[in-house]
Length: 356
Image 1 (cartoon, rainbow, N blue to C red):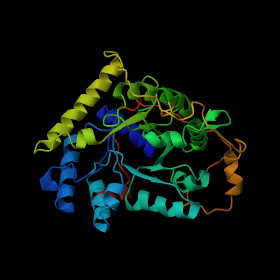
Image 2 (image 1 turned 45 degrees about the horizontal axis):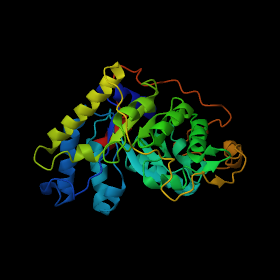
Image 3 (image 1 turned 60 degrees about the vertical axis):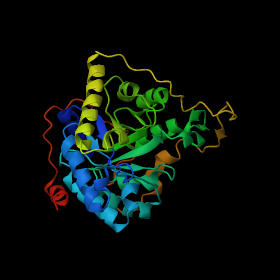
Image 4 (image 1 turned 90 degrees about the vertical axis):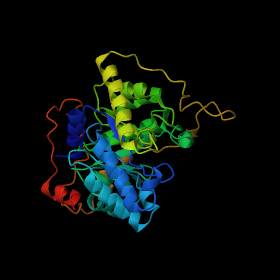
C-alpha cells in the first residue's frame, strides 16, 4: 500500500480530515511532563492514545526534536513507533538540497524515522526532489503557498504572467506520475486555495494555518477539497496539543478534535454554512509595498519539464525501483473519500520498525 492509499483509508476509517501536529513545546506542556525527554514521551503517548481515532494523520515537526540534540531525535523515533500503523506519519522537515544530499535526507526521513510523508522545499528544483519522488510507496508534500506573512516575498511574485505559487503547483502536478505528491497551501489564503485546488487535480493538499494563525476551518475544508470531492488534510497543532495545561489535557485535546470533526461533517452534509473570515488575502501587500506584483525573469516553462534527459545518468534509488517515465502525464485515480473499509496494515518491515 502506498502513502496515498494509506492516507485515504485513514480519512475514511476515522471520518476525519484533521491532521495533528505533534510539535512538543515544553513552554506550553503541563509542567510535570517537561522535566525530561521521558516526560515528553509520556505526554505524546497520552495524546496519541486519546486522539488516534479522531485524526487522519500526525505531523511532528522535526525542528522541535532536533533542538534537543540526540535525545530529541531518539524521542522522535520512539513517538513514531507509538502511532498506530494505519495512521500516516507526516514528518515536517521542509528539506531541499542537491541530489546526492537529498538522497541521504530521503533515507533518513523515510527509513530511519519511518515517515510515510515528508514536507519539501522546491526552491532548488526537480533534482532536489527526485530522490524523494523515487520512493514510490512514500509521499511528499511540496511547499506551494504557505501561511506565514513572509510568503509574499517570493511566492506571490509574478513569473511569465502568473504568480509563482501557481507555477509550483503546475510543476508538482506534472511530476506526480507515481501519485505520491501533494501541496502545502495555507488556510490564510482561501481564495488562492480555490485556484490551487483546480491546478492540483487529485493531489492531496496539506493545509496549515487554521486556529492560531487565523485561517478559517470552514473555508479550508470546502475550498481545499473542491466541495469535498478532492483529498485534503487540515493541520492543527497548538489548539489541540495545548487545549489544557491541567491533568485533563488529553481529554480536552480529544474534545477539541471531536468539535472540529463535527464542524466539518456538518459542512459536508450541508447542515452548516461556511464561516467567512476577515483574514486579509495573501496578495494584499503591506502598506507601503507596491500594489503591482513584481516581475521575475523566467526561462522557458519547458525547462524543468524535461528533467529526465539531464538526470539520465543518475543512479536508481537504493530499493532499485525503476525510474519513472517522465513523458507520461500523471493519471491519478483515487479521490477522497472513496475508500470505506479502513483496514490498512503496514508491510512487515514497516511494522517491525514501528514496534521496536
